[in-house]
Length: 246
Image 1: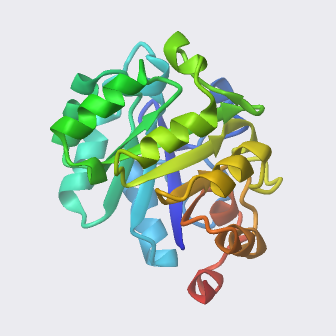
Image 2: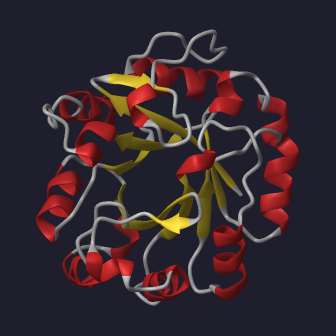
């Protein structure tokens, strides 16, 4: 099972996610990982302290289409070019052209979230143009409801979206419950369980609510292949020796 540190980028800094309320996100305080919010500093600290080298980055400025969507681009490219880390990034892709741009940054995978994806046909076209192992679909939820800005996607059941992705040969799918992000309330939810129990054609990663080694063990026992974690690392609830026991 892969445990993947999360770095949410907002206005050029790594911030702490809280229940999807992005207007409240602030840099971590009292973190045992790093109190320097610079992306490269946090990534290096995760590697040095936990020996973790696969990172999930969410470019929140691009996802939210803020006034400065380009603010995080250069620091992400710097991380890619100056390290050997594996980088998977959600940068708010809507169309195939967006996916191509992010892949050109040199990242290992582009994460395409239902929150911003315009239609599943975009995903299908991307697979025909790029290596499908360079693509991860994030099935995004907020309060158990599918999170999407697309009326086309809104009409499709989440389980059908997951099955569709499974047939495309993608690297993985992420099942992300935004209300659980930073909540420390445990990672299991109905949406995740439904997808895990019914989709076996693609590795499943989940994010939101992981608080301890025991949570990771539960996820592993359910056949989940990866977990996105931030808060439990920064507050010291999950330690290096515990990761090694997995």
